[in-house]
Image (cartoon, rainbow, N blue to C red; front, side, top):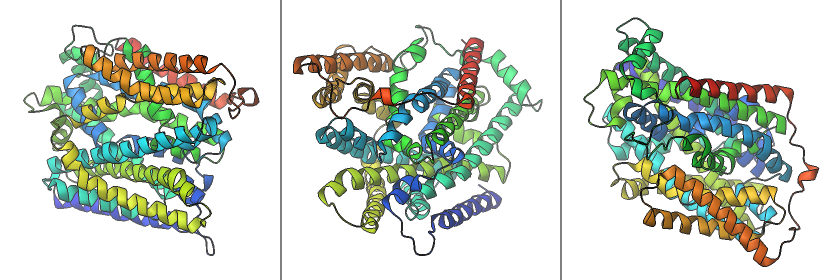
Length: 518
């Protein structure tokens, strides 16, 4: 990176920190409450929600990993992004109204409202463990690897920088600082990513423009534009044909976008239900755009850089073609994705620990006390993440795949217990626990006795098994309505005409994509 690139990046860091400080300040005489710190005071507008959802979602493992998959597999990997857009419609229409009616801070809190404290505690401890020792360490390690590839900075120093940066802009202000600065992060991410894609396609066409480059890509590597892979495709196990449209990917996306504290927390902070739904739809349209930013450069690299040692080197290597100054902007976009994910993750960790565990054992404290605990937990999580990243992930050649495999053991049970809890009155606490525990056992059984089963298909089959197990437990207990279940008859899932038009637009765009590149 040149001095100009470093200057551009430095300006980005300073501006972001300054804006975060301004946003985080409270009015004279007002102290931050837990709602202010953990849910931005319930004040987030739709554009902040949508931008923050994407900023929390897109990190180094998505940018580097999906670009690498674009190099190795092709456009098929975009199903993770495009099917997420469809999933967000369901989350906005059917999940968010239930969550907001309960007035919850966290997903474990909803489980306590619906089932009992046992379910809440089990899932709170589980999520804290996964967030700290799997997700947070992954963001640190893969983020540091990306920075080292581009700048040569040692992994440890890269992780320390990321931790300090994330703490500086998110620790004081909480979710409000994270959400509003995420707007800047997403703008930089999108602009930097689009410029990289444009340069990549222009290079493919040898200066004839991006459109000509895209057409040349389809002519020269047509196999990279198959959205639904055949069984004889070498990467069929990763994207098993039609399953990406009707199988386990729906379960993975529902778990991630609908029942994951790390993601849904910004929607819980919406001004109103309608504002939250608009924000989620904004995120859905951004998800439609993401493959252009993270997958296309990888496909272009398959033509321009045929001798790459590893697919995951595609994105960093393509960055080397950027002109001075612009390279600094694209690097800022990459770091923006990493630190925004770190800020979101640590805020969710502190929210679950403070509101679901600490407040139960230390009730009656003032709001300032709980906010201080939340800040302390965020800082502690960052330190643990840095210390544990290399020991936990440093020995894995494909850390992202390992993470997907690990979380996939529990994803089906989480989706099963939430869906049954929200939409089936008879679902009991014991049936929820059975689904959660059964998810790990069923997944392990499939892994051991049917190792050739693709990961996505296994998730779908385990979800069905978890639902059947939960139903069986309810029947054994004696079928009866649970007293604390939210009455769906009292809820309206009707959405505005604007929402319906936006949802129809997503479906039409997705249909066009899959018809064009089936």
